[in-house]
Image 1 (cartoon, rainbow, N blue to C red):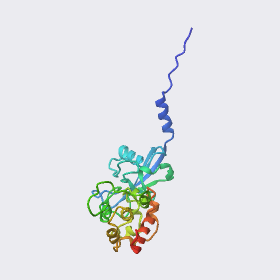
Image 2: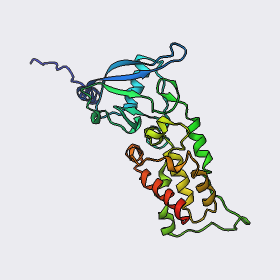
Image 3: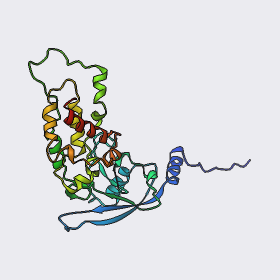
Image 4: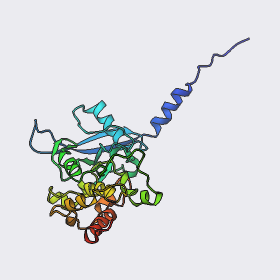
Length: 258
């Protein structure tokens, strides 16, 4: 009686690996590079990698940094669209790298990645955020009250909370501010993000600092610089109606009702 030995086939892990590889595509990422220690000029550099199109741009940047060029520099933290640290211009639009899927970017063509505009580039995709955060601090983004400290929580109706709910969603990524043509031309402008965060407290029924914030935004570099281009609303990764919030602050300045 004869017997035939059969070579065992690939296990489920190998099959899964083969399936994953089959779904990969070849994508080129054209990244704007800048290193002040090497040159005072920025240059474009192409990186071609194999990657699953369902991955995010952040995953591609990780792959390039970890496997191709360790000098590539960018910010990222939570990787889930909450910290806002990986805002950058991808194919000419401000986006969060961790929320942008490669398959949505026409990957058959080079995908361009560059730092957000209107801010000083420190290295590669990293910009100096200090002027942005200073504008945020200048609008006093905290609850202002007078009198004795209450012995219980400051209660608020659902309707009062709804009044400023949209502007509580800001994650300070600077996507809106760095998409604003006014901010590009004059970095002294407070910018949409600062106004959004002022709005969040101006219309809070528990707050008593609305008049102070309105006077700050009534400055020549304040809310009146807005030209209502809607770039900020289009750029917001959280879907905040930024232009609407700015218009509501303008109206409050005129009527002093908020």
